[in-house]
Image (tube, rainbow, N blue to C red):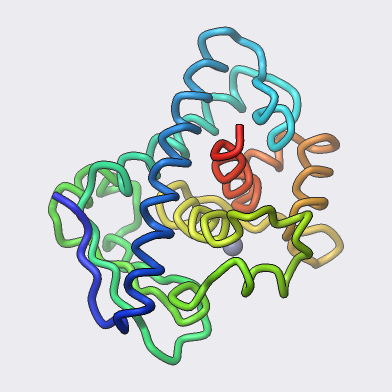
Length: 202
Ligand SMILES: [Zn+2]
């Protein structure tokens, strides 16, 4: 088992593998955290910050998303292929008919799952992320946050929740969403990215 990396330059490959490995740790910690929340029926500090008020239904949703990502990047073998010149962060071949017919587990277990990694993610570094959001917002795990954001779309079917036609990207909007609209926070890819990345500094 283990992931395969193809088409990367030596430097990009090392950097991207490092991002995947750190993300794997972050998601494993998030998985343990959400299990605790479920058992104790009250939010952890990080759960409350990124998903807001506790409800059984919302915790179940967060668990399902984290569980799928954890399965895919923790135990699976994915081929990450660099898509040079792509301006997207990541693209994946979805199963014909969608995730409903072929589960994440089945697909990952087939060992033939491929994710195309676009240049923004292949080249991602904290510096890159800092251009988008300032350092205090991004924290030092901006690359991991971005990676998990994308994986939550692919494996958890999350959205980029919008307000007034603008996606709520970043630390502050995601945090506001958790406080004001927890039903939407649990659908929001960025909230998953932050929830997992912040586990690394717990
Ligand atoms: Zn997104």
